[in-house]
Image (tube, rainbow, N blue to C red; front, side, top):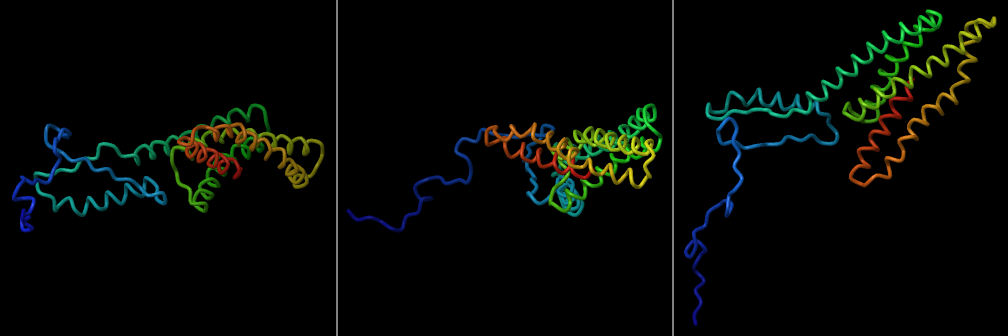
Length: 225
């Protein structure tokens, strides 16, 4: 039986580009819609990605026909901004509460320098995040908020030790120098907090990466003070 080699699929079938049984339809405000998801790379943060999108949209918005509209319904950069504002407000209120509390029990100068540990630690953490390739995200912000309590506790210990030496007759500079010998136990107390969370590394693999970022963020937040 001869076999023809000149036929194409369109000669014997109806060929169309599409799904055989289209069942997923998306609508936005009762109009057909298409959802596009913009994801950031591992080297970029949410704020930078959002800024790139806004710049691009400002350039192409005028070129779109009137029948096409673009709507952003979930922007993670807003979540990051809210967390940054939370961090700033917690730092400010924490500084105020620490000053008010310490002024009751400690010398005014000791209370002041103890409270100064909060902004110094925040700025130090930002610097470490920048130079180690980190970014402001849920894990780093949460770890920094948690570390604020550690920072204040350790600053009180050093401040009280310095004040005690001054009251015993030591020179101010000598008292401050002697107080620096407390660094090893203070560092150990900070590391114990991180060690307390180390069992999180034994969680299932899908959670280890997230917990690892939290532990690393906690370390970077605790060390600057």
